[in-house]
Image (cartoon, rainbow, N blue to C red; front, side):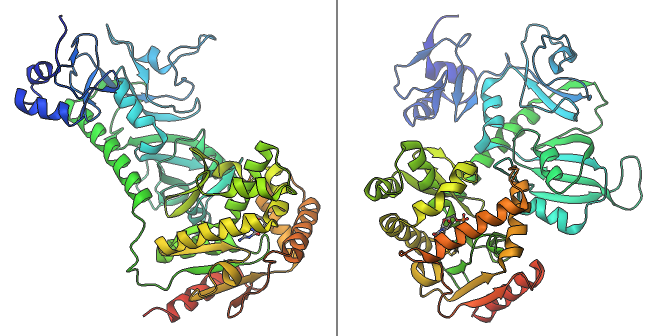
Length: 485
Ligand code: DC
């Protein structure tokens, strides 16, 4: 077919009258092959070009959408050089080259989508737009309430944060009996590699069966193992809507933190030495009251990472301070936690790496770096009801915070905890190495000239070696509620 004006293509496709189509074009809502064309003279070839309005393709007939119930042992790829079966080999649709949307591990089964619609694939797989997915998971041993809550708070594995949106107990498949702590219904947004298997391994469980039963609005339903069916136009529409809604919500949460008419006292300051329990407490308070969390240690770590990359040694204070300036170092809130960016790159998940771990205290001791980061931290706390975690929050950054908490525990207790955490973060550190690390860090952090670690004036001191996690959290909740109007 010949090349035609965009407004004609849109009106022929029944998207809008020619008049409204012109308005859509001028408003920049129409793209051809991914490029926005906002002039009325623009043309396209409706047979070859992909024309979208607000990111949704206009000419749908050429696209096919298939839901497949993938069995285990089948690869989520288009082909395999070892001749193993792939999801594509299970779905033959004449005249269309389908590709799987995302991936489901070889050993996993359940719902997978296949399509030749690149726009939908892009929307559904882009990490920021991912729709919620639901999995039915059988594990080798029961998982108690605490373990399930840990998955929802998030765990670390090989430097990545893995987190479920919810974890519920269900009855075993085929039974109508009581829920069983070996059968979990897990929902999540993440698309990280083997995310469910990895997060369960952190809490010491092995996956026996893993079946995806929902992708956004699309449920596996009664589709039998190995069978597939084409989606209805309504189902396709619902997938587009869900992916776009997801994107909006995420953008919203980046831009709009909770308002300042928040009913609980803020900002909250939490300080303490390494592995004193600060992160556990902070996450529990975020969950309970809705604060936005800034772990200021991450900012010092990001400066260390930037300095290591730039080969700037810690005795070059001016160069290091330059790396700390806002502009390069940025904070973005996602899920009520600040993530740290260097330029456009989100480096949060790289900041527990051993090179950074080994260097950070030296960079954190540079007065010019601290001055710069303290200013950024105060600005953050002024913009949203925040909870800041660090070493100098109650003593320097937020001296007037209405609630200051100071956590302490013996070096021995903390060394043991750090050893356990190291395993969780995927490093091989032994307990004695962790102990040396902790004690070296304590010495640098509490003897440096610039804002050494001290117990802030007016702080509530909690000994987390004596109290268990629940008691520590209860004590902090009480302190915040006491000061709530
Ligand atoms: O809490 P953490 O282990 O992520 O902290 C990393 C380093 O940064 C640690 O050596 C202490 C330092 N730090 C600091 O000096 N001041 C803060 N407010 C937070 C961390």
